[in-house]
Image (cartoon, rainbow, N blue to C red; front, side, top):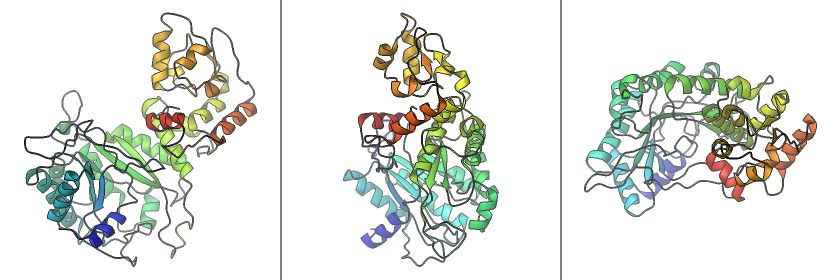
Amino acid sequence: MLDERRLAILVESAKYDVSCSSSGSKRQNTVGGLGNACFGGICHSFSPDGRCISLLKILLSNNCIYNCEYCLNRRSNSIPRATATPDEICALVTEFYKRNYIEGLFLSSAVVKTPDYTMELLFETVKKLRTEYHFNGYVHLKGIPGADRLLIERAGFFADRISFNIERPSETSLKLLAPQKNKDAIIAPMKMLALDKYYDTQLKRRKDFLPAGQTTQMVVGASPESDAHILKLTEYMYQNYKLKRVYYSSYVPTNFETSLLPYEQVPLIREHRLYQADWLLRFYGFTADEITGNDGNLSLEYDPKCAWAIRNLGLFPVEVNTASPEMLLRVPGIGVKSAYRIIQARKYAKLDFADLKRLRVVLKRAVHFITCKGKFIGNKNEYDIQNVMIAAETAENAEQLSMFGAESSKISALTGEL
């Protein structure tokens, strides 16, 4: 059994990987099995800055042969090292599950000996967990770039999700900060997992292979790439690799012995803005070029949807009762659900501002960009609108980075509506 000292080391070493959302799997329990990864089977909890911590997040080993400058587990770092066996991980997961400590597993590893050796250990772990320990709960496996593609493919039949973290937004930064890694080794398995042979005729992922798909993660701020560069890369990966999510992790200093990395942590608000922009890419019909504008970086003062609307005031105001669904989605304060409600409600009567409030439109943002029955009650001056948006974001009760603040903050954080 894994002792407490090694457990503490391996859990601590895994804390900087944020790409561990557990939604989207439909793996069901079997007779006599443990756990269930259906939609209601994972109990999510969140840290104050929004990270999902519902899974047991652990490394198989933190004894890495690589020396990535930004990584806590780099070879040159003087930290306690530990390695677990596949059986120890399996026993830990099942015992924690029985005690209701966890609902699933996020398993990763530093590169031990070689990528193939490490990936084989990870594959053996998830296979044993399914076939010998009969665990049917959610399993997210962090793939090892450079490992044999057959090992990765075989692991895909036992894991619910696999992620290959792209780490750096550019190949130049990757070579500078992680010279033992290369872009092709990371991209190749992502391309493989997106092949049509893993999908049925309706382009839905086969139930027996990665039912929750694949994700990736980028560390933000450790290198000088702009938000525009990051979002263009994100957009490309969504379009070409069938990714479920791209995760962003603000750089946290773990190495003060090099001049290649900043000495201060990147503000979490930048990470937050990238997640908001990511939501606009996936659900609101925006492109990366539209979101970032000409300066290349997202505004830290207000969200990217407001920033786009202010830059394009010539397109506003729009009449709520006649605007297209696509245009409604571009109005700050109108999310996907409220846009749908507006479209349904206006079939029966013309809507006014009181109606919009009942439909849960955030009027303090929306009034500057809409009319109701031809009536406009917002500001027309760009600078006045900017000040209103900034004041709303910095108000005493506005808690952007907490999922446990005011009720409106919870709704925004959980649904992504802007």
